[in-house]
Picture (tube, rainbow, N blue to C red):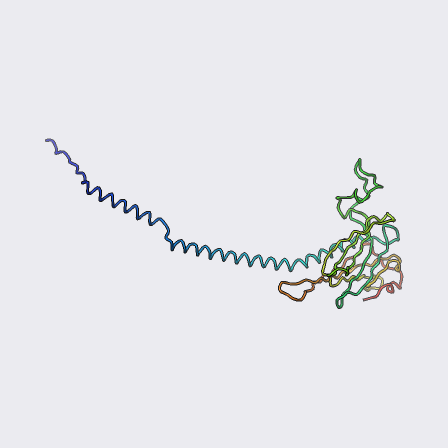
Length: 280
């Protein structure tokens, strides 16, 4: 027996049309749900603005803190660098013999403009740590006996040989400055003007004291010509500078104290050596 043939029913035209309208509406609703409303956009912008303001405030506080620390450390760094320059020269002092390269060690005390302050003066001769100033130059260059400042250009400043150093406070400028003068061409009778560099500004006090090992006391003045060409065993440097803190109206004072041993110093044999300088 042959089974009956299956029959398929097709939806009517009206039903198909209604299904199409539902699909279109569903698709339209889904597209609307995937977009942001105006309120959502405003909320996102407000939240982003709040985050940016917080980041700006944190960065601004950090930058102000950095500026405050830098302003506080600059005087400390400058004063210590100035004392280090002076210490490096003092550690290479040569004994005074009266020759071109080893002249007199002269130290003079002078009162400063502020109460209990000093503007001391010091002159001495020292020599660099290197030997390039006496080593013959390379082949084709000038002879060793004709070395000049031009031949030594570009070399290490510590390799410049013998020179005269002067440390003093200049009061012809405002505020006072600590100056280092260097005279290099000591063999030339007609010496050129010394080179001058400012070590630190805003000087309140620059005091130097010199330890007399023979009499076991600190002197405020020293002249090697009066002490059988003897040098002090040590030099005490006291440097005071003024600086303004942020928001302050009165200057603050920063003080540096260093004691520099003089390697080539020997005790004076003159029992009256203390009379050459005032004891303190």
